[in-house]
Length: 544
Image 1 (tube, rainbow, N blue to C red):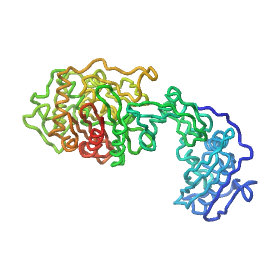
Image 2: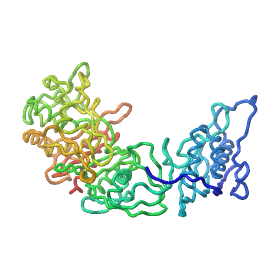
Image 3: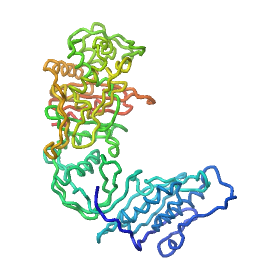
Image 4: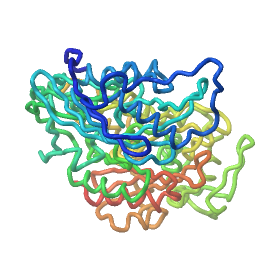
């Protein structure tokens, strides 16, 4: 992905400063030359040790490995791990591809079998040098066949962000840096908006050259996945960034970043119904997997927006038509129930939608007379699964064609239905607008990519019924408390999704306010309005 000649370092200076049992202070003059990283040998008849590694063994094994690594001796250092075949090329690339010419490694106190350490290195490339500091850790384990204490090999031993198959590189960047701005021209940085980190990296890889910048010299982690962006770790020489305008809104993004931090695992996306412009994307944790746009989870009762649209379009019901809502219902041997076993006597579809009655929707499945009806509705009207081209990698939702009990579970957003916050925000935007507008993060004219289009729109009558039911949900239904602080024309739908092996259900919430739709999911958040609801409300209040 990026260029830079591989040149072996000759005369590179590495050092390790160590402390603890049996440790001294080492440098290139008084301890790192001549076999400092050598290995001990055992006779074939020696008894293989078993049991947990001891404190002394942890000290000794980590000491030898760090000395060999700091000395730039990849062959010796790799033999001090439990996977020399994978370790040696990564340790070699540290000098030859990452161009680290000096390094001082300072261990901290061991915690059990883990030894943390800091690295203070110098990276040099074509006459440019710059210091580089970071921290990582290693774990000492007992070798399965030799019984010797060895470093448990993982690429993160070399750098905490390095993963299997990825590599460290230093050279001229293939993609110039970008100055990403929101739709109003306000600068967006990963320091100010942490959730945008991986997104901005991807935008740089895809659009850096088109944005008109010039490349600099950097140290980076090169991803083995063609769909993932490289991660810059150090800039030796800055290039000239090109300006890239996104559809994001700085105010909505700031609100989203704050809102998701209230939960250990949460994500939210906001989309403009009239255009598909993505206004905010946020995750907690902010780094790593972009769950808001790539997650795959059952969305619970927020899926009833699609189910209701399908049932109304088929003429099986309407917003004001009476509909049964018993405490439980059985379908193909599977029993479905409402929260706390509630029922709604003499209610309408709007009542069942606003109060999130599961059984009312499942009782109509036979009348639909088409097991694939929900999958068709999701695809043909709401654009689910149509290979969206937002500008970054996304998962675009999935509603497989099912039969029997699995088809019934799909009606209430369980079973095999898979969505994320982006998908649900788009579904709400389609209900509000009447026509699917594929979400976008950068203008399609930038690269001429093909935007997904649905095969048909909702009729004005169906769109109005859906949005009116969502308005009732926000006014007096399950979304009332969360949406109380949101002004303007507003609507909502709550959802709770049970997950195998998880004690508490995931909390889902989606809503709109004027020309902004947003959706959120909170892992183990419980009821939709309790956790995800306030996240959505915060973004809707801030959005344009």
